[in-house]
Image (tube, rainbow, N blue to C red):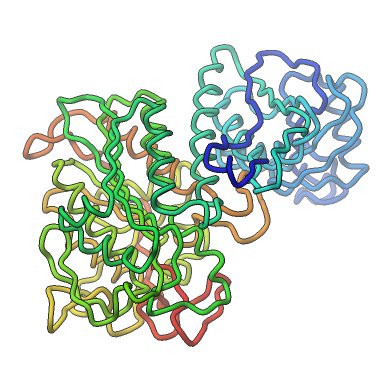
Length: 555
């Protein structure tokens, strides 16, 4: 585990992932178990031995495992784990039985990821593990195992590297080695985002965050540009400067570029990087404020995604624009009633300094659009209303309709559960100001997530395919670890953004105006109805779902 001095150079703590084409001797072996049918009534139940899923083991061994699993009452619930001594014929000292659900249900990729993740976490500290789940779907198994093996960094008095080295060996079919390598690369970048989110705010602030992002990006071969407070003032970045103006640690704007196919327009990524959010003058309640170290989860995901694009060699130019600020109250902080001139000239009346995320995103979006991208994705831990509407695991996706729906569809495909949300015209009037072009909050509490999306839409250049992903809940797991998700930073929506980038890169044919064709599809998910609760409301929700009387929120 890292010290305070090494936390920003710490590599994600993941088990090494290897591909094997035949079962090999290991300390522990992972096999799947699914609920078998009850011979009495056909509905399944405790009297039926589970079905063992263990490719590479012969029938006698799997029968012995089924008997053992039944005798100890091992749960077949997806992600449940039970460790037992290995019977004869198993190439290990012990076995981790991991639930796959019902044998009557198709085991999809997300089930494999969740099961492999839970099993890998159960195997940490046990040495080499062999995972026998599905040799034909190597990437899903390997990715789940790698993500599940992640251990959050803990700041300690001295480096502690005494833990037994862990290796996870994934059984694959012939030719599956590349899928495991890809999965390991994705997991490393998701782990990077998780570690950044978990880093304490006294150690990760705009300057140190920018330096770390630049160091990681340079190592991946990216072009790097960092704008400090003087550069931001010269450029007229009124939103970033205002939000960061109350802190003794000034703001930054980081630009990271992966060069791919120069015959196609770039794709822009923008991520909210509020390294700590007190709410500013519109200060939050003390209860729960310690979690606001995660309010840069969007920035962490964007930094990780553009690095991942480079490491995977995407033939697509990707430009990340990442505003970083610390929202603090002080004599130099911005105030309710201030009118800001944003980058690009739009003026915004500040009615709530705790609606700060949209202000720094607005500056960054305008700058990103100057690169003439075909598509723009921004992501942020933006509103408490996201959790009220969709819960803590389903990001809200807003934007131009076709692209919005495609992003949400791809998000669900990778297990990050994005859901398309509308931008209702009737909410737009709430952003009108008597003294500026816009106000940063509406005068009511309804549809807060959607109102924030409408505010951001004002800064997106016409013709750019745009999606806004609100990950206020999904970016941070304040409960216990489950499946491949740890407690703390989750890395959502890195895998969603990767899926979208690969989808765009695979598209062929020009858009009207010469850009790449937007992927065509038929939406399979209706837009969910909006729920109330947001920084803009008088009584916004806590992350635990309760309501407080003054403005605790993510904005």
